[in-house]
Picture 1 (tube, rainbow, N blue to C red):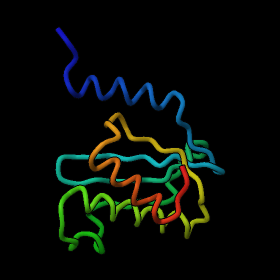
Picture 2: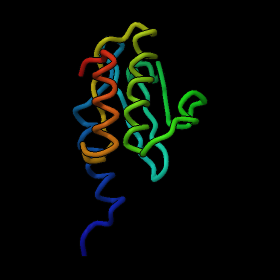
Picture 3: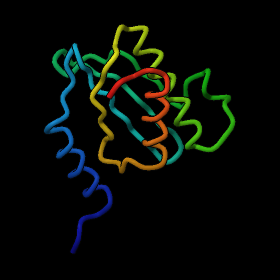
Length: 118
């Protein structure tokens, strides 16, 4: 019997997190994708602190119209702007066990367009 979808995702997530670690100089951009929403956080793992966060449920993005992929791109731009305000230029991208495709890819491209480097 094979792994379930969630078990497979958790295994991939552990494998990514072994090598992806956020420091104060280069924090980790963590992405969580649910069925309806998408969330992004910039995390300093040394101190266990979230430096910036954005999601599709934020007030300025809640009224945005479009597909879930287009909204994910807007979330990427929002997290990049908040990270820039906090003085963060480069991050380590953590896709959270999801494939780099669709909404996760759109969020990453939106963050890159807004000037975040990873």
